[in-house]
Length: 291
Figure (cartoon, rainbow, N blue to C red):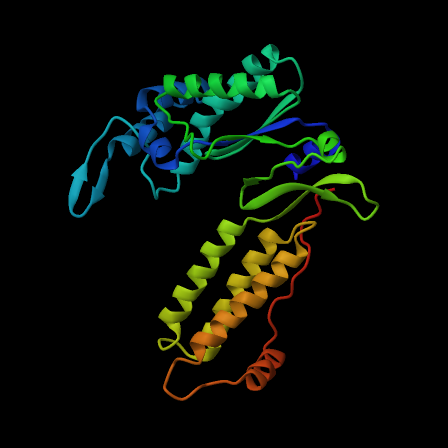
């Protein structure tokens, strides 16, 4: 919501779509630097010692224990918190205290975990920030994934002049410029196509795996729960149609694999639709208004 509102209210010329390599990020966090950051914020020495023990515990993989002075243990409930503390000091504070003071126009950072978007009023600022960010991350042994990091033209005024503008992905959504009902150029968003294809593939694999393991009632309850989670995340202004398409596509996938539980088909479409009427699916709706 914060990113969309910024794009809606401000004339943004260039968007830096930043991707810090996830594997490198979690595996490359320097323990000493992380503990220094935590010590500056936390006075409880006993708590710091617990963090040290956790970081030094190592990772057990395939029966082999690996110890390292770098990285946070992936899979631990504390890993995202520690990684976010590290990124806050390395990126967020640096951006607010250093970057903003050296830019000609307005710049704004939006970050969630290892994904970040930087909105810049001027293209020259975007180029300088990209170079500076790469050097900043190198200093802390982090890696900027240049294949996924790009400068995206996202100007409403240029779009009004007929110049085609680009789109970018952030947190599972594709941001693009479109027209409102009144014909005004505004930023919009929709479900990211790549993410949806991955999700549909996961639904397919899940349906193949459970079709003969559980009763239909259990499969249907789990399916509805999965759909509800998707709708609650992606049910955002402008994205109603994409949510409906996802419900339709996943329902067809489940119908296909339920019919392959035996040589004899379990359903035809009339019978399946009657089953849905008796056991309703979650409906597409807008949970989050971005205005």
